[in-house]
Every structure is written in structure tokens, then in C-alpha cells.
Amino acid sequence: MIHLGSKYFKKTVIVRPHNIYGPDMGEEHVIPQFILKMQQFTKKSKDSIKFQIQGSGKETRSFLFIDDFVNAMLLILKKGKNLETYNIGTEDEITIKKTAELIAKNFNKKIVITPGKISLGSVVRRCPSIKKIKKLGFSPKNDLFKGIEKTVKWYNTQYFS
Image 1 (cartoon, rainbow, N blue to C red):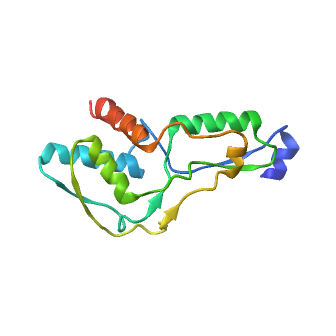
Image 2: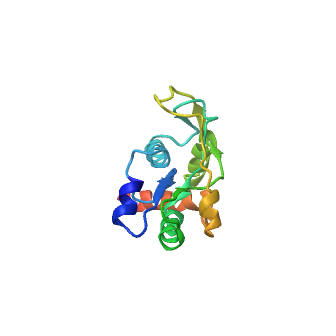
């Protein structure tokens, strides 16, 4: 791939996005799954909610809000070096349990985490090294709390309406 890129294009870069989230991303990733689950539970229960997750909840991820991803892509297109690979993400890790609790907080609910079977191929930790893109000047602007707040708001006003 890199060889073909250098043969036919002036500049070829490879990007590796890691755990991007935000409004309008469907139902198939951790954050929208948790939001959809919370939305269903809030209709049924006023008390604390038993919230089943995959794994123990101690698994960690680093989530990057879509606006930061777009800014990273634009930066790579502008300043990225030919034939380089760039991880796009953040190095701020959070447990899956805390992620679920953060989403529940946006619904003003308390949850009781119930561990579940972990899916095949899942890893305990997923956090990219973003040294290369930091050297280009990248720094995420949206913290996880604000990003989840924006995402929950979108799902509540657009997805469920």
C-alpha cells in the first residue's frame, strides 16, 4: 500500500483512529450502546438500574470526540509526513465501568454494574500512542464528560424523536 501510494501520489499517510465517538454514530459502539441502554431503562425504572456490561468493567479505553478527530485529520493532511502512520486518539484512559457511570450521570441515574461475558477478541486495554500527531501540534479539546454530554443530548433529541 505504501509503495503504491508513493508511486502514484505526492503524499500518502495512514491514519489509525481509536475509539472515536459522538452524535449520529449508530448503535454498534460502546458509548452509543450505553446511551441507548440508559434511554430504555429510564423509561422503565425510577430507582437505581442494574446495568450489564461486557467484561468486568475494569477494562480501559481512551475515547476521542468526533470534533477532535476531524481536527486531527485536517492537521495530518496539512502537516503529516509522507509515508507516515498516525494514531488518532487520546491517551486519557477510563474504565468501562466509569464510562457507564458517566453516561448514567447524564441521565441523572445511578447504576449498579453487572459484569457480563466479554466478547471474543476484546482486549483489556486500548490506548494509542499519539506521540507523532502531538509533534504536529495535536491536542484534544473536548474532554470525555463534555463529549458524552453532547452525544447524549444528540441521541435524546435526534435519535429518539
